[in-house]
Image 1 (cartoon, rainbow, N blue to C red):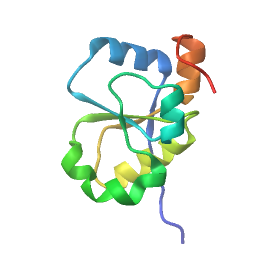
Image 2: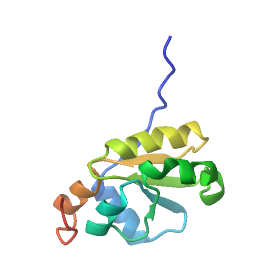
Image 3: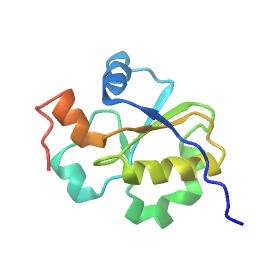
Length: 117
């Protein structure tokens, strides 16, 4: 018998653009990419929690973020952020959304000034 994988909602980069424009304090933004990736390209408002540093921040996630608020998670293409979303749901987060296509899609479809790598 396998454990059920929590269902994770998704958000498009077009929807992300609207969220960023609204600049709502009710939305939490998490970027799970690595420091080297962040140095190339990043979006305003995102807090960085690199997956490779999971052990250093995972125990404090519930004190740093409100599990009841909308939480959007970003990575390069959407795979690592999807993993983070599943973990957040398992920790009791109720409004987690994975950003489909990640920062690469955001650069390609929304803002070409964001460097691609």
